Image 1 (cartoon, helix red, strand yellow):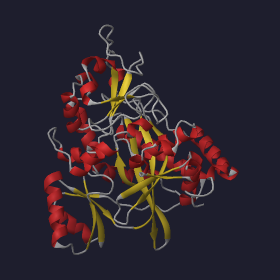
Image 2 (tube, one colour; image 1 turned 120 degrees about the vertical axis):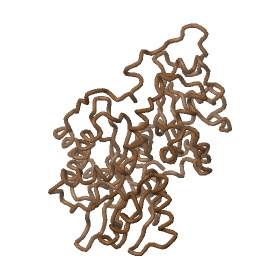
Image 3 (cartoon, helix red, strand yellow; image 1 turned 180 degrees about the vertical axis):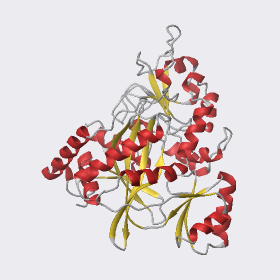
Length: 429
């Protein structure tokens, strides 16, 4: 089945609904056991710190809720800030531009009564703060000048795209109290886990755990700490993908052949000098990209949230996500790997392996990119191309489809600057 993004509604087909319900039953009967870590992650601010309540002199927000609110924000400089590892890093022009163009993105996953921090130059949706906004729920849109001490007292948690030193510095400048910020050692752990070293460690674990999977499994990942180590791997693999340890959306990734050019060698040396190493993967003939989206909970369990299908440019750079119903995404994945049972096995195994690997060191959303490839003997699966320990566009697409299914949002409600990020299934157009 090939998902039609402009024509028929795939969720109308009863066979797909049957596949989805069988898959749900499989999940229920094969749930990964909860894993209780020795200590809870310190990133879960609200669970270990007494909430502060200001009774007098409260700055009244239009959609204030006495139960406390979350402050959401989109920081697209996150991955490059992890690479720089400095609170004083100045984001690239592209990241600064996206921070303005896509600053309304958190409205997709924020709950009614929450706040979204937006740049000063961004006009608040639907005028000031008096109406339910066009996204279908009541949110407090806040510029930096409105983040007063009283407002900070009402905030129980900060929910960014991803945590890094630069963001913590920006939040402190805006008046954020320390109770809402991760500690230095937590940020260091997150940076390490966000490195492509995680792929190098997790990929062999997944291949071992998925032995007997219907599709043949492929994929290797190596860290090279010197140019000489890169050449050693080229003796075994005529074509390699070279990847910066910290980068996103296919940037910092390039292909080299057995005899790299002077320019490619210079690029490799620069990455090793700046980041300590590069990741190397044998190059494959790409068939289809997709992802599994998870949430790591404070109890140590990693819960599968759904599938993400996306488009990439020939260079490997991200081009956009498909927005479709869970049934349609399951059916599309089933078509890729052969059966609903195989889909269930993949979800369960990956959730279990990441539960043990993370062991409570991270709480929040994460996404794992996979791909099917073409080999001499047929189709094969690479079960981990990379891991993103942050919110992803795949998570966002799942939230968006849910809001549209519930009738809370229409595609036409979304500003065109953000709408262009997705390919909408026909049922949502």
